Structure formats: C-alpha cells, structure tokens
Image (cartoon, rainbow, N blue to C red; front, side, top):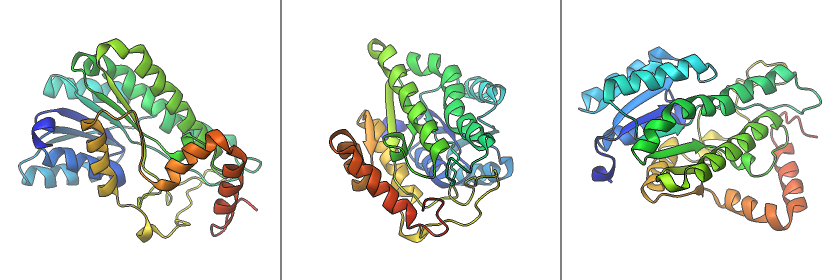
Length: 272
C-alpha cells in the first residue's frame, strides 16, 4: 500500500479528531502529502507537528466546511502548496439526537450546512483536480444514509443527500476515471456523539453508547485506504450495516421496527 499512496496529495476534512485524524495519520505514514482541515487550528497544529517528527509530509488549514469560502481557500492553498489533489476525504460531520416533533429547525439547517453542504463545497472546488489525476472522492457517511434513523432526522436527511450527490457525481464522470466511494463505518468511538445537537441546538455532552465497545477510528481509517486501493463503490463496515442495506430493500418494515427498538433503548432516548 505504501507505493500506491506515496506522494499522493490527500485532503481530509474533520481531521482534528476521530476518523478524520486517524485517516490523515494513516495516509501520512504511507508517504502521502496530507492536508488536514477542521475548525480547531490548535488541534490540527498538534497533529501536524507529531507527523513531521515522523518525517511525514503534512499541512493544515483552519476550515469550517459550512463556509464555501473556507472550502475554496482549502483547495486553493492545497494546490498552491502541492500542485494538485489526488484524494479528497469528506469526513467532517455533525450528529443530532431529538425527535423531529421537538427539534428546533435550526438544528436541521446546521446538520445540512456541515454534512451536506460541506461535502458539496469541498467537492466543487477539488473536482477538476481529482478528475485530472483520475483520483478518488470519498464521502464518510452512515447507515443512516441508507435507512432513516429515528431521533436523527437531520443526520439521516444529510446523509441521504450526500449519497444522492456523490452517486450523481460518479455517474457524470463515468468516462473520466474518477473513483467515488461512499463509506458507512457504523458506530465508531469518536467525539461525534458528545457534540451531537439536542432539540434546542445545545450539545449532548455525554455519549449514550459504550464508546469502548465500538470500532476504533484507526480500524475505519485502514478500511478507507483499502477501499480506495480496491476502487470500492459503497463500503459498509459492519454486519448491522450490511444487513440494513439488504433488508431495507426486501423487508423495510422490519428495519423500521428494529431501528425503533434499538434507538428507544438508549439512555434518555427521545424515542418512546
């Protein structure tokens, strides 16, 4: 894998922690020129310093993906520094936890701004370079993009939107050698649930799940690289996800009830 990714220019959004950080590190250790993007400039600087001590090539740019201008700047600065872009990992994301009947609509707007529009903004400005390099465009998504997840209307809607967007980009560029992959990692130990928005837009603060029992970000990162190497189209990392995608097509009502039961068991669940 080292030879495949060596000297490739890779942008990873949401790279200050979790899956994004692990993915950036994985690429860097394989010889890629990695650009980390996130809102926390301080956290990014720490990671870049650590990578440089390992003789890796890494840079970072403070980026709020909900801002089109920030995303344009991210792409322009990357090309200015490295000349092109080979791989774009759209990982930055935000979750929520509230029943739709209770939620303030600003929460859904925020979810769409970060998850969907963040992917659109970065892809828009990176796409010419990705096409020129016959590179890879990746969206880190969720099983919630294949079947609606109760208590996560904004999250599911944003992931469904990402799927439709990336699938269309794939079809439009079938003859140009562009690789597009949608990856659904399943529940992964990260900060996303702690920062998930509640009905009033405040952060949840405490994860409703046993984070120690979930997949690690490093596990997901390795699969991202493996998926790119094998030019995967869609990749669901858990059996729950694979079964959801299958059963959603043949017995969707069963999946409805299974999700309802699963989400209602969570501590302080908004689903009763």
